[in-house]
Structure formats: C-alpha cells, structure tokens
Image 1 (cartoon, rainbow, N blue to C red):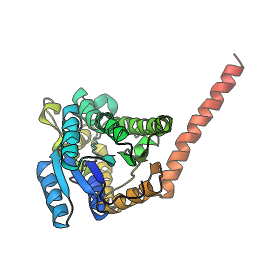
Image 2 (image 1 turned 90 degrees about the horizontal axis):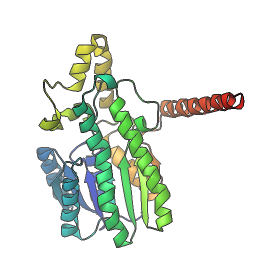
Image 3 (image 1 turned 180 degrees about the horizontal axis):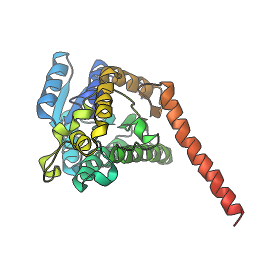
Length: 294
C-alpha cells in the first residue's frame, strides 16, 4: 500500500507501546482508525488523544486471545467504516522464566495473546479483505526473538514470536497464489521503549493460577543471582526506540512493501541472526557427513 488517506486501519494493542505509535501515525496519514486493547483506561485515553487531533477513530475493548472478541472487533469496524485496509496484529505480552519453571497458565496466557491473537486476526479479517478486492496490508508484530536463537529465560515468548514469523512467511507465499491485493509484513522489534516488562498488569485473573506471582519476581526468588540482570534488562527498554518512531518506521516500510521490518538495525542484531543461521548450516553439513558415511 502506498496511499493511506481515508483508508481504515485496525490496530490491536493500541493503547500503549508500538500499537499506540502505529495508531498515531495512521491518524496523521488521514486514516480512519480502530483501536483495540484489553486495557480500558489507557484505550480511552488514546481514543481521546486521537480525536483531539481530528482523527476519525473508534475504540473496542478486545482480548485478542478470544475469537469472539476479534469477530466483534471486525463487526464493529465494518459497521463504523464499511471496510478495512490495514490490520496491525500488534498486541503482545511477555514473561520471564525457564520453560520447565513455567506453569500451564503461563503458556496459555502468552501463546493465547501472541500467537492465537494473530491467528484469530488473520482468519477473521483476511476473508473480508479478499472480498473487498482492493489494496490492503497485514502487519504482524513478531520480535527479534522470532529470528535469533531462543533466549534461555524467555522461552514461551520466543516460541510465539518464531510462530508469528512463520505464519507471516506463509501468508507472503500464499497471497500471490490467490492473486490477491493484500500485502504482508512482519515486524521484528528489538528494544522499543514500551511497557512490555510490565505487561502482566493486564493478565486475566483466570490465567494467574493459585499462588500467582509476577514472572520476574518469581524468577528472582528462584534464582537470586539473576536480580541485577533482570533489573538491567528492564532498564534497557527505557533507552530503546520510541513507539512513535517505531510506528513511523513500520509505515514507511509498508509503503515500500518491505516484508521483514526492523525497528533498529544495530550490528549486534545482524550478528545474532548470522550466528543462528550459521549454526543451522553447520549442523546441516555435519548431518550430511554422517549420512554419507552410513
């Protein structure tokens, strides 16, 4: 997509972070904006801010892990604006902990939001876009964690973000076969100044389980030597790319039909990706050597 004015953008996770940055940029482009988030007060504040700027905007309380919420989001979007042209599957959560220490409710919460949220989004909105048969774009927010070697204490998050990358790559292959006018991009943020380290403020009570503790507190209690590392990790996000800048980068990349979108291009990310891919190729070659000698 190269023209945005008067088009319709739906943004999940729109009340804060990258989602809010995307919504602000969409409004500046003259788009009609549908804000979706689970955090009611922050969502209302974002809606009021955009309306003061003159934007045509509605907000919908949405738990992306629930199909019925996404279907309601689509219904209200079409009722309000008639079409949808950009879908930003952006809502996401994270938590710390080694995989064997994580509870089933930990898995259900993070996978429900990060992966099922995107699945519900594409299954609900793509048929609408195909029926429209006009220029549209899907923006799925993954992470650098979806491209580099899985992080030791961030396993569930990494699992979901690798899934979002694979899902997006599948769409990229499928759309030309359908001869559709839908483009797709996958965003792989590195360090963006969001509240991702405090995302458990929005964790549903039914997915907390008995004796619930926030994951960072639980991790430090089990592994006291990790406390300084956890604090440094949290602090790091305060110096990251701003959400507004991330939103601008994403929109400029969509204009240029760029598939993999990065919010910063520091050499360390390139080296991390290179290390992972070279490790895969090394093991592939070693496997071939074994096969040749059997």
